[in-house]
Amino acid sequence: MGKRNVIMSEFYCTQCGSKGLPIWRRAGNEREAGHLKKLYCLKCRKETNHAECKEYTHYQFEDFKIEFEYGNFTEEGLRKQKYGELRSDINDGRAEKVKTLGDGWSPWSW
Image (tube, rainbow, N blue to C red; front, side):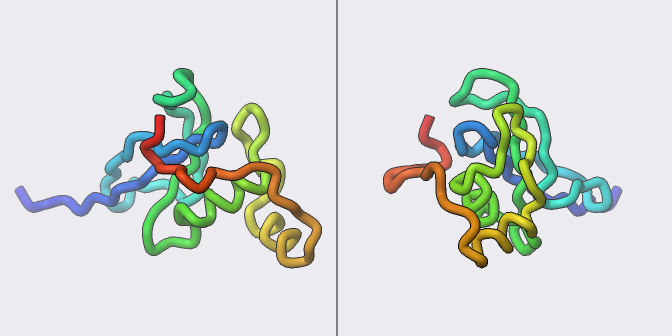
């Protein structure tokens, strides 16, 4: 039996910004980067939406960080507006940061 290509996705909680447990998906079965998935957050201690980030894609950790800091997620963990629209608002000066991950923030800081 041959080796199967797998791709690792990282997940970040839309409520607290903490890094969740990674998920490995078979090539061809992966989801779009930026996809929201309900997972248990170890910091919040409840099931929340997590944003899926992948290296070498259009949605990586830095993109999640921008969405998180500009408050683009509702209390239910859904996006208030599409990421491209948020970036446009930021570039045009129509959006301001509402929270931060903090200077000492670590993706594993529970």
